[in-house]
Image 1 (cartoon, each protein chain N blue to C red):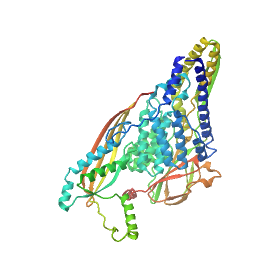
Image 2: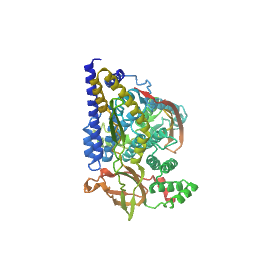
Image 3: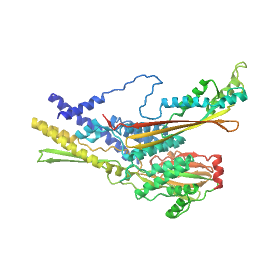
Image 4: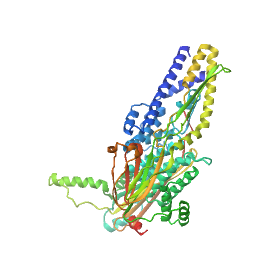
Length: 196
Length: 439
């Protein structure tokens, strides 16, 4: 009889549990589900761009042309088993590239459309002194493309998730691949067997 | 604890449970009426119901499905992704819910979906993402479906193994030009159908034939050609490839069987309630397209009615065991109360009988069968036929014309009860187009 009432009471008590929010540092690593998260995105972007900039293609280009190479980020495709927000990953890479100070960055094709629209509007409406002319854009010298792949091995409540991020820097002038980067992450995810 | 508090709680508990049971009856009734009503009206009625937190996943699965078949794919994905997240969290065994199920009834557990429902969730999401022109996201869902099917895989029975999920996976890979992976998925679909003694539909046959030929798998191609007694159709110049995904009917909802008997030897009434699926009234109705002088009809790749019965049958041993444990627990409870006071014993006995209820929750707005058709269509403009459900409501059809260009792959999603047709078009890349023309 007591067990019966204990079950009823504990169920009612659990219903009363509310949401708790704690603010944490953005650099703090919190792995909840084992899925690709902000830390993976940031660390992979930083490490891969650091690797890209440590190779001679930037200095070779600067030596030949006398200026820093202009890079555009092309398509980075998600071939993984998770819905990964590629926008944050691409933004992390752009930030790492720009902050290096060793390359210039040009707007992506999506961004360019909006800018050109604004420039056309300036042509009609902005004053002579503030107007920006068409035809003055900086063309990209290299395009960064890539993909994220995963292999998931499942056994019961355990999963091994293997992520592989491949990035390629391609010369726009002649399609040469001047840098190939690869970063791998492996996670063992053990799902809870029991919950309250 | 004071007797008055006990009595209050004892009275309130079945009242609360009955309130939840009424809501479940409303949801079951809405599902039963879906074929006769419209998904829009059903969605509105469903949204007026506030489900208890433990039924949230079932509620979201149904709202997500209704949003999908009415064309609100963004809204559908939001609901279905939330449902997925809940179902994933619920895969761990709950101590309190099991205790509740052992003491009161099975509906005190959170709804965590049957094996097939968990896979069908990914299947629907992948279709939705395709209709949103997001092939990469559709690919994510077919990969997740594959992981769930691997988790559920057993050697004795194909529980949670869905040919339709593998066929959609093959289609998604094919649309992304990943032909090797597509071939693997089509093979898996055929193997699962063979395990369930279902003949592969022409859409699957033609996918296996054409892909084995394109991949140069000569031995395999010959094997299929002999088995299916027809050869792969040669590619037609200036034609597109059409794949039709047709959802036919609405699956039969679960019902509960209750039994209460007075057992003189125990000196109390004993109750039990078990869920079951009544015989299905589903009559298969293919979607027939008459285009370019030819008739194309969809054929089933998945008998959802059978799948859900298979799932329940697989769960039945655990349900029976829990029912037996609950009968013993309730017997002890009534006996203990009767030892204190005869009147209290009788009162608790009535309460234990009232609280006994079968768990009739299911994803009850799914189709009865999932059908496919696959064929080539010369470039041009075509009038799309109506699903047989459309009847007099032809004006409600979302798309009536299909414009076809050479080299395209077009996926039509036809949820029969919605009287709407949705499409995804994948234009063949230029370099691929050149390769195709040489085949």
